[in-house]
Length: 186
Image (tube, rainbow, N blue to C red; front, side, top):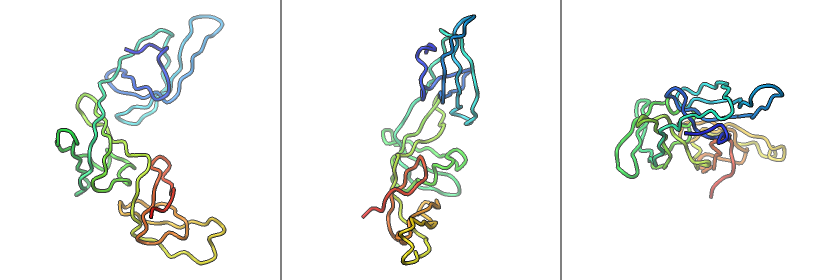
């Protein structure tokens, strides 16, 4: 169990059987009465954000969370197939369960899958992924000094903004947290 003194951003706790992650917290010591902790929690199951107040010294449960290394195999009919790198068991997740993270998946990419009570919650992709540009308009010569960008479609189906010098067939590094172009890979 965790006490309110253990609270920090990113700590995973369980309330009424549902796992949450602490997004923000604040210890408050009013002039009258006991101290308390205001928290902003995000559900790992639904993604909903709630505000919760705890008295100082309250205890909350640790969630039964497990992270496993999984390898992305393929996508078919809106189902994404993964294989556990230790046990070779297969896992199927839908596009809704993956959300935006499906835009960074390519075959054989190793990701981390988060499980709560043996039930998959979602995946965590690496911070940076390298994907091939499959469609992009040609850049206009001379416009590069302005820092202009153009849309490019990647092999995973994601559309991002890239500099004008990026062409079809180039491999680009993407920051999965911000969905931004980082650099072209040789």
